[in-house]
Length: 73
Image 1 (cartoon, helix red, strand yellow):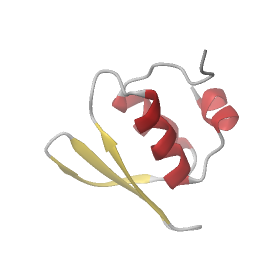
Image 2: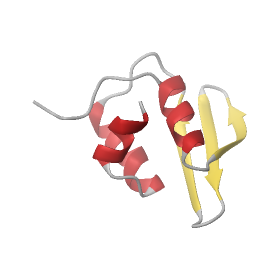
Image 3: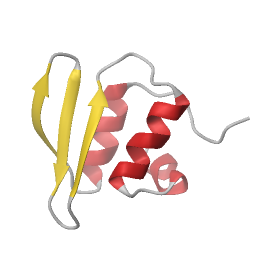
């Protein structure tokens, strides 16, 4: 079983905001987030439940380890 929880796009946005990312813009159901230092731009789908692969890719783009993300929830 994966250590990643099933979370919504809204929860991911909230967690990313805790580590310094901000919502840059939204295009349809996709929220574009940006962190300036160190630079990272991430697209988060505003879905009710994100697939594990999508969530893992978001965390990789944001340079956040899975254990840190779980602690932010």
